[in-house]
Length: 460
Ligand code: IFM
Image (cartoon, rainbow, N blue to C red):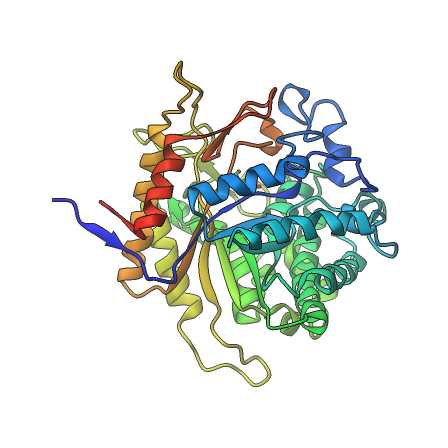
């Protein structure tokens, strides 16, 4: 028999988006170019040569989008600010028109009783900063803190939750190592430097936010994390898991939550870290009130000595269900939450100077790209997404029942949007968007999610 899964009264139900993926208006009202503007306008980077120039035009249609959030019943909306709207050169001159947009958005959210979760960086670095070296350059971390201070000064009278970064690991590794995302660089040393500077910038921004805040604020970060499993029980594959887990999960979790860095476990990290990680950096990074977890899938690996850094490669196991981008593996969200709780949130005696209170945790992204579309009667029957949501949220509930204090769940994404190198080929929204007309339609999964929010639970 089905059981009714109940969530705590103050559990936060939300949806997430990001500036480059939804806003459009790429060169309006004084916005400067970002690395994504440059990347998409260079042929060969994005499927079908698509761009985020207009995407779903959230910049102009945000009121309509907030009305949809209200109709679904969201408690919270996680969005990101485009740095190059605020500081077109990355530092120095402030573009008031850019700040005005987020001001209007925040007011509209609050008017509709939706809590803004503001993220300062979701990959759209101002191009002028990339021209000075980008994230491999330590100065970019200081530029980020300056930008964080400017946004805090303007919005912290109303915004209380401040996320510094979304998936810094992806920004570093896909931006500077695999080159799949902007700025499209393929240099392992640049990627390791970027990761450290992104984390350092979190710590510097946390200081800036606290210094400029006009009231009490919570400071968080959002990480992409995956459980890592071996392709076989062989010793080599199990060792490959340890290396992949270190680079994929511990590379961000350890500095943020333990004040240590596992970089030295890799030859390239050893080579760099003598000069890269300066005294005091790790203490600065370890500054967190809220840990956001983005979960989509697990990573299954086998030993492969051809692959640089980790000597491991990812495989797709047979006989499993797949979406347009990944394996569907709901148990992974439970496994991840249990592991983070045990390894990082259960208080351990801190060394002097490294004391920190345990941060809250939330799922800040979870969702699935499956084909869907408008049926003849105007409905979008995306059953596979509803199943995905049911199964994953049930696993979050299972972890909570086992003692993991998860405070909220954000679906990725509110609406279909520009999915980076995939262009518009992968739809993640609870709201369907006709990319030609900008017509929005709530999908069946959106109605299901709405019911879950109203009941604060569901039959499972
Ligand atoms: O669309 C992305 C988002 O920008 C970051 N997290 C994963 C999502 C799906 O790929």
